[in-house]
Image 1 (tube, rainbow, N blue to C red):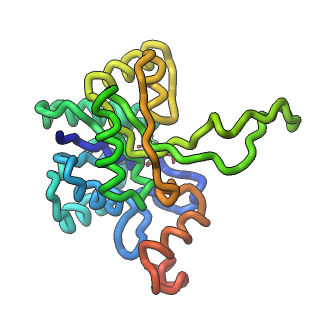
Image 2: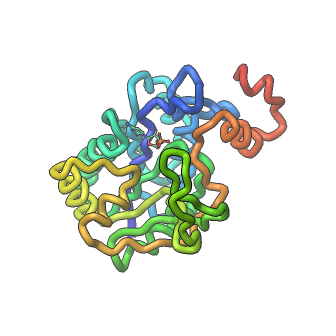
Length: 239
Ligand code: C5P
């Protein structure tokens, strides 16, 4: 079973506070987008990798092409949209046009640049029966529902999970979910939420807590420790 993967790298990532989009930030001389794309390309189940990028990504894409080792095929990048969901829709249209033989797609946030090939394999395996799957991890903090600075309730955290990517879908199911969301004016922060709205079954598989999303400067420092160990932080900042 083979799938294409959309690597979502558009959007600015304001919370990171960098002058360039967060998927363009370099860690150990390689962009965040490239870390994600190259890791996913090593998964046996991935046949095509399609980056979805914002403006100004030319240099990052050239570097990615030069470093490309496969075995998956790197497709030409497409321009993302104003929201993550629009970026997914643009990417999926392009994937279907360029690799019409595929039945399955994975959607991955490039910002989760500690992703491993086995994350792709595990989630696709989980999706085979139902058509949709995502990796989740346990919530370890106590949760509070808060409004206007006052606690409304303390839900049982055992019922809650944190959603990661890559998420896996049958292409026709994700297309239907995107179309329905657009008709309803619904904007989701992940793809699973769109498929859930159709009433379809989405199954979960065990995620890896290390597969964090680059969001804050502290995340970036931790990722540099993992992906570029031994380079003093002063030099890493200059690199
Ligand atoms: O902003 P956030 O971290 O939630 O974005 C998740 C992922 O979606 C990131 O990898 C980002 O590059 C991507 N994204 C996108 N198009 C947008 C907004 C975000 O591809 N318009």
